[in-house]
Length: 454
Ligand SMILES: [Zn+2]
Image 1 (cartoon, rainbow, N blue to C red):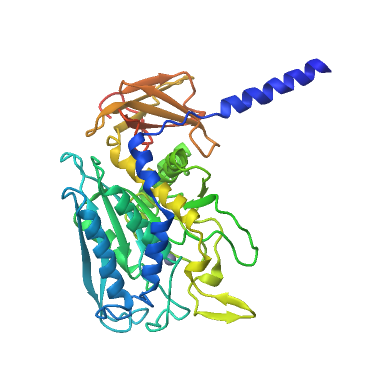
Image 2 (cartoon, rainbow, N blue to C red):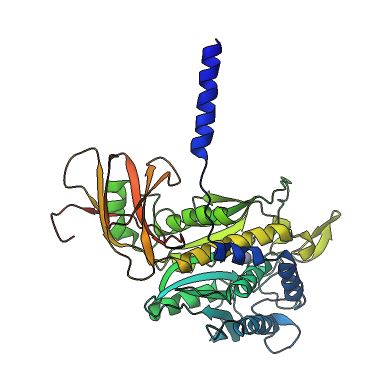
């Protein structure tokens, strides 16, 4: 009897040990993450709320009220941070005119996305990473351009996260470019994000990741009354919206329906975000967005970019899209006093860690090929070296096909590897890693059937 107990004990201890992960933090990224401040986030929210309404249809000419004043204030913050960037950060409002559309735009209006671009330091590296939130707010009637619409959490939270990220990252040098954007017109139909995604396609931007932050500063649900500030959701699509017809055959054949670009980015947010932010779990949601709601990542997803949505774990629908009022003794409306700024700090920090690690990483390895020319119980992969960045080597990631996260990492300085694990039983991907330990996004291999020159 005693022996059996001992054996069980041993199993428990060894499984705990095998579950331990090595946490290696890049000091530069840790310093950036540590600068994210709940006080600063709260001050920005209070300022945003002071504009009364940020309805996209509201006044653009008043200096104190409405969307125009709010956009100009965000621009002034970006310009303030840009002055500390040695000329690498530039900011402007990308404006255009909207005509009435018979839907959610009833008059000709000027609309604008407030953009800050932190130019990468490596002229050969054209990668762009985007972080977004939507500056516009609304009440119950989406056409109401007059009533107070504080929009503290929806999406003041995402907007101030973007401002704070620009503040804490402006002084740092990254090889790749980061674009900080607060878009307009989300509530009128994702107008600002659509505009930006269209521009990116027209100008051939090499966007490798989009983090859309929308509703992420409140810790409690309505009706079920759950209070939790230790979990953040990341939404990602499964099957790709873009060119699905071309991809479906290979997806089905190789069983990679859980490994699209957005899903890879979501896994990366979880792994890297949790590496730097304590007491916060990133929960992967296997869908593009919530029911009955849309988000600014979707115009990017629909054009083939890796884009995800970050949102709080438990939403309070009494604080979204509501006229300010009291019903049965309960205050309804999106007020700042119902937010949790420590939670918002952690959620913003997840963005900082992810963006900094991506922008410091080498570019992704290219032409990653899984060799399936022969039957066998091992796996051979080969790839082409990253084009840019200080590459220390490559991680070959491996997981069982039924597992949601990568389970093992094999490090190599070579551009090929043979592993004693069956290609039939595991998924693999390859990511480049820099001298400071910053990983690129993982690349899923193509299947190499021919002999040479794939
Ligand atoms: Zn929103």
